[in-house]
Image 1: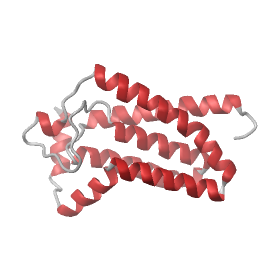
Image 2: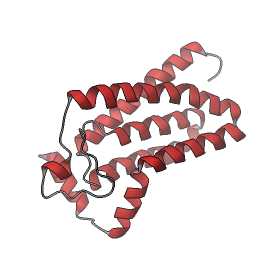
Image 3: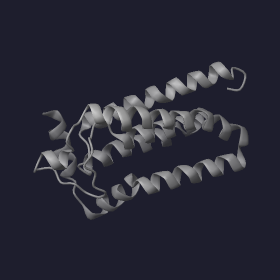
Image 4: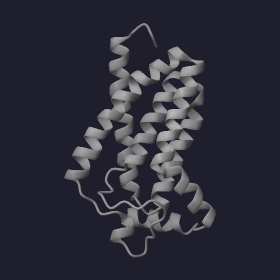
Length: 174
């Protein structure tokens, strides 16, 4: 299966440095604190752009929680790679809930795309952060490639839904 091959390939680059970097980057507390800090900085220096981001980000994250955490992960119960395949190691914060879809990738995608809506010149950084989250979640043994791609597509879809609704409500502000 291609999912397992990708996981095993990434884990060939096993190193203590990658463990530490990816564990830090994928830690939920870090994700929440980093997002809050970024939003405070933006709201402090660019109030209008900050509001624009929040109008998309807050409902999108609520939508994510209801769709992914409450609905999809309970309907599609997929065992995490490190639990289902003895050749795949688990690193960092261990989860035993369904691995499909990747919540980390969905959240990262929603946050990064929401910020690039107000700051389009930061797309490269945003896309890099999304890519790193995909790699980190596979490397850590928490997700298969298909889990992360599903998370990416869900994040894009949820973001586009709320961006479109925001633009319909506030056509003169974007």
